[in-house]
Image (tube, rainbow, N blue to C red; front, side, top):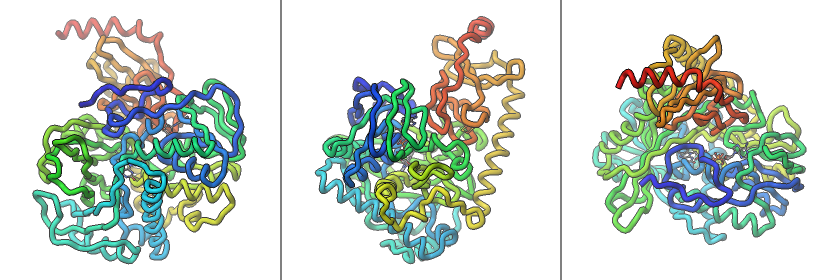
Length: 545
Ligand SMILES: Cc1cc2nc3c(=O)[nH]c(=O)nc-3n(C[C@H](O)[C@H](O)[C@H](O)COP(=O)(O)OP(=O)(O)OC[C@H]3O[C@@H](n4cnc5c(N)ncnc54)[C@H](O)[C@@H]3O)c2cc1C
Ligand code: FES
């Protein structure tokens, strides 16, 4: 079922992952013309994911002249790799939010996400968007590694935050379960790429301009410049590139990148209700940010629905630390799914990137330590679709000098060191410790001859580190292994066939092209090294046959 993407002219760019997703497969890639002249506007927005498109839509509606610049096609980043739950029952527990923010602000958090779902529903109605939007219930049940008291605590905190929540004895829809659950009403689901297509059409009708296949490599308060040297001059600049590519250090110390995995399995049509299920997360894998499972249904064909199951997250570049490499995560998901649901063939598998912030909320607003007219939206915290929708309204208000009661809550300048305390330090220090552990291991395994077909590894030659990938034609591809963001050593991701940076989540193709920021520059691709080493490797491979 992982069919080739039919790519429109102008949408040639690879997506942020090598596996096709249901969303990308079920829509035509949305491409516009490339930026090939210098232009001027009120607001330039970089990034055509749900954040960039929502911000562009809200700004255009407020009367601003906008230009959006995207380097792939619309949705070719993480939005095309999502699972598309629209929730006010957030990934992080309300009792944790209450501990960090207090009762009043926690209510505001809940309101902002409820408001985001309402906004999407209203927009779907007023713009007549056919994007499978549906209001559904969501069920939160206990993972066996979690404390039994977790559900009643969450119930109390969620009620205080103003959510519609009930305690149930059993989990509806699950064939095997070991206890009660919480039902959150008025959650929702949709097809994100169909939704964005309609927003883009509306943006254009309102006079906005969208460019795709146009990579921005320079950003300042006067505008942005593409690889091809064309400038968009603007009074305001919004960077919605998922991880900000205009903020090299500060923001990346406040959030961590995780890979998350999804499978899509056929189920008998109508055999499960349209709803969302989540477990409370595996505390034995990570007690601070426990990876959890998330499940929903989606209409597929006349006989089948698709059950979309996600989870098995790990810090980017560090899957091996848990002894479960990236490519094995899909089988873990399938085993888990079979325990709870009657699933048929698995016809989709994909992975994507999530940014967990130090205090569970996205960063939306003015870019810290920059001019007042430069804005960012980052740190999805697993709830990037509602956070992006909040950003649409919030950034529009900030640009229009209007008050917005969520401004402080989401301010990118906030630094909640003392309230997040343990989580922040453990993730930061744990990340560094793991990074150095894996670095040491790489150094001991410097044997080029053991490289397998379709795999990569890092080696050290004369004190310099290289990533080497051996393709199916036995050709070797060398890249400099120092990440172009802040020089951490990249690691091979054998699922995505990419070089992933464990420090802040930059990712690169086997030829060194940037897939995910914060890096904006490709890894150097060392063609000249191939001839020196290729013969030796091929000779060894032939000997072993
Ligand atoms: C597996 C998975 C499941 C998820 N499930 C959910 C869920 O159920 N609910 C939920 O709310 N959230 C979920 N999320 C999170 C959510 O999908 C994302 O946070 C959200 O889609 C990100 O949107 P974005 O616009 O910030 O980023 P993106 O969609 O990544 O968009 C950024 C865009 O910027 C472009 N870009 C980058 N650099 C440049 C440049 N230099 N020049 C021009 N363009 C550039 C990229 O090509 C990209 O298209 C999930 C994420 C994953 C990975
Ligand atoms: S992403 Fe920051 S060093 Fe690689």
